[in-house]
Length: 389
Image (cartoon, rainbow, N blue to C red; front, side, top):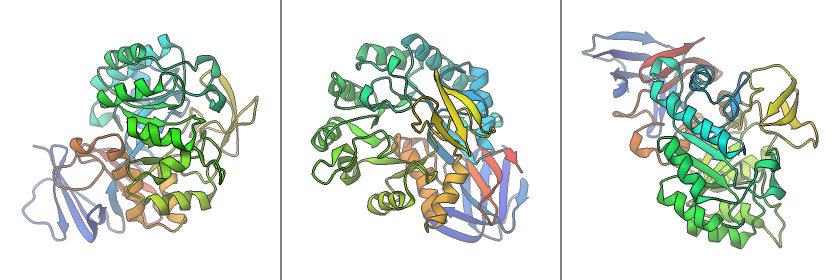
């Protein structure tokens, strides 16, 4: 049995903070954590004085990184390359996320994800948790940076095929709940244990409440790509925000949402419902310039992504470590940031049974070690050090 112990570091988890702690790992599983000194252990030791261990970050909404795009680089080897790049930013698990595309191309993505998940091992980098389909069943009037050419009415037949080809690995789907056929699709997706998230939607407040009763349990990048709020016509965003069963994606780049709005969402919903995401695209970790999101041209200036044709925001170049730093800068504790970047994301896609997203005995040893200024020092996946600075 491979044994590893992380020593003399602060440990932050859902149950509290250990100032001078240790984490014991056997065969990729956390078996014990506690206060120093550790006793009766003969495995490898990693001593990290002055650092903090937190659960690995989980990004449930990311399109790409470092020149790679899930929708148009769906080959398994390219997906596994993405795993290595995400690990540099403390991400130990993620949902590769498509943009709206043709049926045949989404089939290729499903096939690629299935093959990549079969090939994956901890040494590769971040875990692939399944696939997030952002579309194609959206409201074309709220397409944003989605290509209207590929937006279409919900199809249970199509979704069944995606689930089958992916090996039952469709983990989340974003849909507009007001479009024709959405009600039936929401019910079916919920029955198939696919998390249904409302997004790119022009739904009213009442339509939002109805969709929640049908099975919507998440908001795709809250307020972005949604009916504009008005005090007499609040729209779906308020319905999602007010409903205690709904998890809320927040792009924490402080660009997609004003910092005051980010705080308003988090303070109202609490970190237990707030899911930090990146919505990152192919330009992430790349210089400013011209890129593609799907078939649409994107211009990146000072790290901000906009469609060349319309100037609409088109994803981000945010990484999860920066999202956590931004959250702390807004006044939240590291424990709150951990909740929003690890624990809540796992719960939002029904992964509590997988025992991932927290530092507890019996959980997967997916751990990020942070410096005093919250930079990523080491990323550990399944007990394997996959990145170190």
